[in-house]
Image (cartoon, rainbow over all chains, first blue to last red):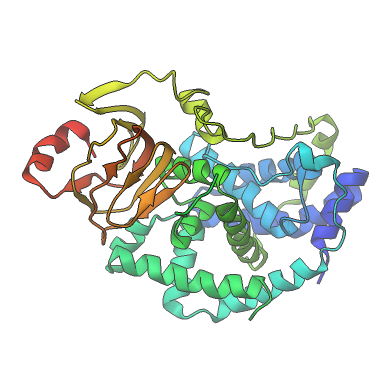
Length: 179
Length: 216
């Protein structure tokens, strides 16, 4: 596996455009696929993807490898870009970017552990029972609220929540390296 | 700030996925700014989003897109870091909420609803509501259930209901299984931020009569 997190950190400190190209080639097609699944037109998906990738450049120095892998950070950039566009209103956010205070602290170059987890997590997502994977996908890729999912699947709201809870429990155990 | 009541994992997933209503997302963001435990939880939940992104099949991106963007990089302004979270002294509005109601809880233009109750609407569009509610000491909110979900964040004061006691920073994250009757503590009034994804359903006759007025 490529160390995308390390590449992002390096790009941020060196402003090296060849690293930007590597990151762009890896992430832009995925970001576009994610945005497209939210149900926007091809042209809009292109535009939002470009904006997201520009933000990757502009905000790279705020990326904190101690908090997230590169893919996680890119996910949040793409999500915010899409929601803000769809709602024409900023999604209320508590930013996980590096805060002013922590900017002076040395960054942690040891990100290998998060990467293994991220890879492992993909496997665990693929192994979730169908009904749990479904509610996770409907939340993340279709932007549906619990109530909408309940209506769509014709199950009680409480069942939607408990399915999500079960799925997340497994995923978080993986993330903490306990499963 | 000692926080005892946290967000449900399933609510955090919706928030992180970007699938919460604007009002509910605001309540979640505000709670997270106060609550270290939920902040940690958000970081973990976002990693799920990252893993999902990593396993996406790639869409086609044209080479010109990359060239266009490369030509723009030099002109791009570098983003400024956000201000760090300040300590929460009483009366100060948590950062995510500030752009909606200003910095102080003491300079809000309340609308009177009934004796002992006042409110301000924050979002009114969509099926749900998001509003700030101020209740006088010792007052009780009518028993009510919910058709959908309801988030209540305590910004000042405290109340108790069937679930427990809620104080500053605590969040009540309730779904349609719960019926409760919050009673505000006697020593001081409470201010809370409430958001629902559908209108509340009061269980008493008086509640039914009041519902069109309160909208909750």
